[in-house]
Image (cartoon, rainbow, N blue to C red; front, side, top):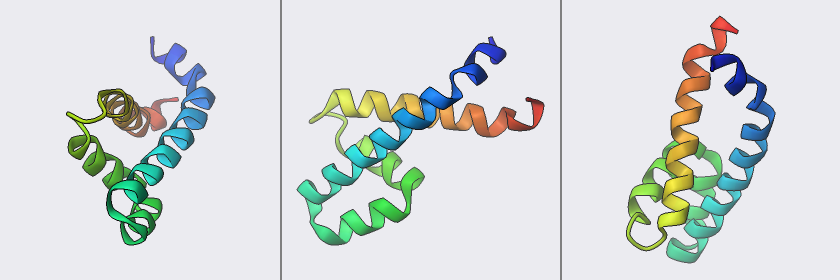
Amino acid sequence: MKALLWGLFSVFVITAICTHIWTTIIAYQESGIGATFLTFILPGLSELYWMFKMFEDNTLYSTIALIHLVLSAFFGLTRNDH
């Protein structure tokens, strides 16, 4: 199972970049340019924040952000084993 997930790492990177761009757009629409700048430079923290903030308004985004945060933790914790 771990080998399969590591095989999909390049797909994860591409989708994580897309999710971060989506997060940045949400930050701009919801809070303006200041939040956009902070969101852009702090990807992990900002995605966690916006995931909770948008949980009832945008469940698709919240679900995708949660999946990416879980996968980020997985890849971060198992990178030395690969």
